[in-house]
Every structure is written in structure tokens, then in C-alpha cells.
Amino acid sequence: MTQRLHFADAGEAADLAAFLARLIHYDKAAAVRLQAAGDTLAVFGRPPSFEVLAIRTARLAEPYEQGLDTVLDVTVSAGEFLESVGGAAQSVRAAGEAAVPGAVTGPPWAGVLPPRGGWRPEPGLPAPEAVRDLVRVAVTEFRTRVEELPAERRVRAELDRVGREIWSRTIGGTGLPVRAAHAAQSLGFLRGDALTLLSSGAWLRLRTAYGSVAVRRAGAPGLSVTPA
Image (cartoon, rainbow, N blue to C red; front, side, top):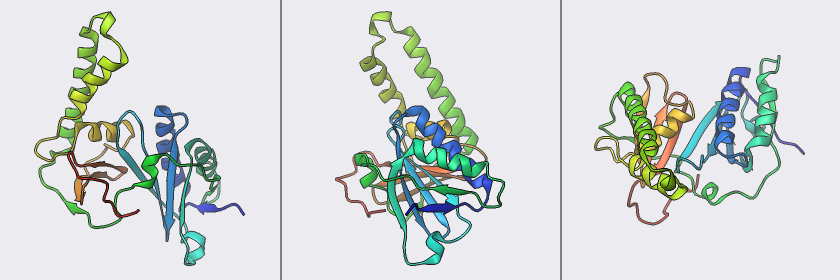
């Protein structure tokens, strides 16, 4: 029996479709892990260029499975899910419906997600506009340094080296790498004035009104994570 999701409105489906499209832009074969309980759907993805976990939630019109004691937790093709969600976004009904694609063998990251709870605010994050400026400066630096390389050195290994040097820098004293803010910007999350840094165990989470990006703290010991 095909599982179905009933979005609160077409706008919720449209925002989720935009997120899925951005993920696929970076990885045509992207997979996403879906978790639905109550009236909230959480979608986890990992754009390979950024080495972070991206999290987008959507409101459902009714509790998953009509409030029965069950949850959805499955890893699916992002492309197949986008086709279904895209149809829901164009629905003329008050609450669009999307079918859940069949499960796929998930990538390693899908088995280790950030914890559900225990998040607390972390100090030191600059104002949203300052974070966006920091990303713009970093992107400009990367492009400039790549353009200055001799043609024979513009190989993947060298580009990756320059990228690691720039994107692994931390934002102020927060410990949050610049690549997390860059990912948030590229995925359409880094908009508006609501920007919060949270931590839980070994994880840091940059949360905005449009989605979140989570990374493990540098030097965090082992993979000791509460299953999500």
C-alpha cells in the first residue's frame, strides 16, 4: 500500500520541492531520509559539496496516519520524491498530497542523524547580514585564488585543498565552520533575520526560518549520537 503525505497547504509542498531541487542540483542521485510523526515531516539531505546535513521541515494537514501510533522513517530517492511533492505543490486542493516513493538503500550518513532533542543556544553568532557577508567574501576569495592558479595546477586536488582551507575556517569563536553558512546560503536557508546557533552533544546546528544545517564539532570523539 502506497504511503501518502497530506501537506497543510500547497505552499508547504512548494517550499519542500524547492529544497529537493537544490539538493539534486548538487547530486543527481541524491537520497533523502524522511521522518514524519504527528503533523510534521522532517527531510534530511546531504549535499556532497558542503559535507553538512541539511534539514527541511514541512507542516502536514493532519497527523501522519491519522494520529495512529505510527511514524514514517524511510530513505528514498530525492528525485522521485520531488516528482511527487511537485505535483502536490500544484494541487488545487487546500492540502496537496504526495506519495512516498519506495525505500532505497541509504548512504552512510542517513544512519547517523543529529539528536532529536537536547538543543541549547550557543553564543557568539554574528548578525544574519554579517554571516551573509562572510559567505560572500569567502566565495570571492575562493574564485580569486582559483583564477590565480597556473592552468596546470587547476586540478581537482588543488581546488579541494583551497576549498578546505577556506570553508573549514570557523565563524568567530563559535566553532561553526564557514561551510555550514555557505551551505545554508546555497540551499536557500540563509534569508531573513532569524538565525540561531544551537548545540547538542557533538553537533552544532545553524537554524533559520527556512531550514537548518547541522555539522559535527571539529575533533568530536567517535560517533556517539542519539538515533533520530
